[in-house]
Amino acid sequence: MGLLKLEIGEKVLYNGKNSIIAKIVDIDTVCIEEIERNIFHTINVSALEPHDNYEPERQLESLNNKEWAIASKRLEIIKPLINKKTNRLLIDSVAKENKVSRSTIYRWLEKYKKYKTTSSLAPTKKKCNKSRLAIEVDQIIYENIKKVYLNKSRYSINRLIRSVEESCIKNNLAKPHKNTIIRRIKSLSEEEVMRGRYGKSKADEKFSPKTGHFPGATFPLSVVQIDHNTVDVILVDEIYRQPLKKPNLTIAIDIYSRMILGFYVSFDPPGEFGTGICIYKSIMKKEDWLLQFEVEGTWPCWGIMQTIHLDNAKEFKGKMLQKAAINYGLKIDYRPTKKPSYGGHVERVIGTFSKEIHDLPGTTFSNIFEKGDYDSMRKASMTIKEFEKWLLEFIINIYHVRVHKTIEMPPLQKYREAIMGSDTNKPITGIPPVVINERRLRFDFMPYVLRTIQEYGVSINKVLYYSNVLKKYIHARTDNSKYSGKQQFLFRTDPRDISKIYFYDPIIEDYFEIPYRDSSYPPISKWELNRVVNHLKKTQNKNIDSDKIFKTYQRMKEIEENSKKDTKYRRLEITRMENKNVLQKKSDSIDSKIIISEEEDEFDPNAEPFKNIDYE
Image (cartoon, one colour):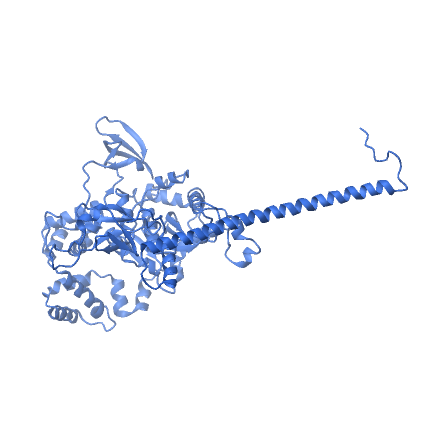
């Protein structure tokens, strides 16, 4: 990951020149000094870059299962030392217990504190040390702890050790030392042990938060809640501005300050991708986002959060999210079932947004009584981009700066005081470090699939992709042997646009865009793809390929566009007819008055001469 620390004395780059941070001016502003010319600049932190001696750590995708196991094991060893003031006696104790040298422990600690990722602890390619514990044995220990130790029968540790040894003998594997198993048990949290051995009610009694207080939310980015919601407003398409549907909103809130950290809005159903992008946007700096939508204001929120609090929904439990969270040191807590109060903070924010959204054109309101005879489809006028800009304006220039009832101050003030301090309080934290490689951060939180590479390229969801980058990996095998299994490669996907995928080259250790094999295919979303495939499955049970998918998509698109044009034309015709009828009625009314007036003038026996003449 690599972090740019924003502390006094930290070396940085500004406009390509080596500089040093001389003063923290504000939450998003620092004063830096150019080292060579002794010139001072007061600048926004977004203008800073890492010092030229920065070396990136190994990427998550470059690690095989064995290297990931080694990195995870090393993190487990140094975890008790990470947030403590260490001394030589404590380091020696940990080193002796784990049979490694003191210098090795110091080296691992230094690496982790610099990068804050599990992958940084993986062995380097030059010194590829082998793990003392086979990955199969590691899995056996994990399964037996779950099955034997975390059991309401409350079996002893000796019973667990015997069970592990029996499983290893059965699978012709070397038995682990009993201390290895004991260390694994010690690494379990007290809550996890109590929940497994004594039951959920006992664990909840001790560890559940008291009403009105969220445990651990004692400073910015300590606990972040994320949730989804369907927004009560109909949006229109970008081309014909015809009504489409209601969008889905994924939003992240900092519990301590009530600041919104990030959000993601789309027409796709809530899923792993939307959650990942929301986390990515919460961690990254916001200047480029605001510039893209031409929104004025400040949004000084960035950095890796400690804990993410999520619902128990399926999209929050994907393999991509779990592995990325482990790598970046994020703890994921799931809301207890049947206890909606645990997600109250983010749900109240969504409720606040809903009240404001009900003033937008095209709102569907929360219920039928509020809606009345309001025609949401006819009144709809905002596109999804315009709605995203509206959300940015509301969050930055209204929600963040007005007084929040619970904390009795604006969220931005609460956030700033915790980081910078105030007249009455000392700062709780300093400015969070900035993630250096935002591109890699985005990829790490995107869904991925593993595929072999064939002559035609790669197939994902029945769609073919190809680029010359893949050529050298066609029919690649795991150990280059004729009899070994085919090698699988990692591909990242963006459901919003499946016209390209992102291939991770394990040799170059970087991503490359891979387009459709047939460049004539139009860009579509995964949601549109699924709709076409489901349609084809109903009409054709087999032989669904790329050509059929995109030809069907084109026909369905033409039908939709023609229907939109017809709808637009008919609405214009109806409007013209209505206007014509109104004009005709007015004309008839005027004509009838004129006729009546003429008849009265002609036949009125009491009419006086010159009575109706106007005089100036």
